[in-house]
Length: 532
Image (cartoon, rainbow, N blue to C red):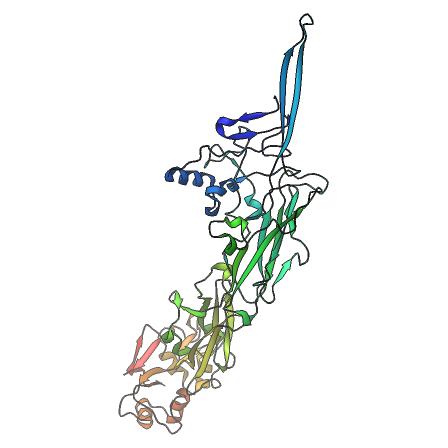
């Protein structure tokens, strides 16, 4: 009849119920048109091209290829079919009338869809309705009409996905599902075995059903033109005791009647465990099992673009200049999470703290200079005070790179020592005042600093001065001998060189700060002066 369109040559059946404005497979239409080629390709190359064009998920190929396209089952669980049979008969001779005998056949092509999981790769990319001039067109598949389903479910987890989580941070794991029957809703539930990790929770909480994530602007009284999308969210904030653990979590779907009086046996339509159906079963119809891995941090200092090795973690002496803070020595250290798993926000933020057992000298500060997620930089600053911070063996200083919970640490150590023969003048300080402080004539200091052009006007860039010159102790030297050679009292040499033994003992190879006759001094680069 006029309301029936049977395109048998192409293998499609389209029924529009006489509604001229209805598009097949859309809205409240009573029919669907699955626009796959018939006969279906069998050649391997043609099949590959076909699946590529439709962007079919691997598990939706072969007999499950209809799930690659977006279509739905109309209200009342099927497509209404009306076939009108018209017969004509001639009236008896002489009456001259034509009578139509009309019989109608009514049926419903019923379809009970199984609930389907939805994710970025498992949602239909194209509609079953073919491209028309008024509809959007895809450059990948010119005869296809793109589906907008992906924008609502791109955050859905996929079967077998490994979700990396961090201790102390709440992870949101979203699961999406739907039923192609417009009359049905879908619940998403966790399997009791293996259950949820300790501390995990669900939203909506059980026994509540999964929430509607998208309803295409329809309500309980207005039939929906497309199936609702349902969502349940797993929240998990791991504790430090759960680090390095893997948790397998499985969810299943269960359809139930959303509208209408139709009822079916509870539990008859839902996902099934993979072990019950085999590997060929499509992933959208099996339980959704994921692995939640609580990844550990790998805290470390950065050296030459990589993690510092053992030789980098014992840095030896680090020299700091006494006097004004304007000449403070600054040491910079960068730390990061070197765990190769994950990137960006998947990595832990690593911090630096002082080792309580080896905190370094009093007044040494540790400041965060470059905060960040991937890596952070700190600087160590210390300005020794003359006569107060001198220490024979220096200050053992250790820094600890660590995550927030100290699950992973790395220790870097150095020896903080006061720099010999150097002093940083404060603003307004004079050479005469420096000489009185150290018990030497200001003229000697002036002559030991050839970069100073005017002893009465010390420029800011010249405030780092020599208090003397460095002499390397030779074999056979002893304190009294050096006192005679450099015309300095032994007590003065000990005051300038705190590492000299209390009994005056010195050793070959050590460097001493001395104030010799000026003609014996050799200055390198203007400020580093030695005597030979």
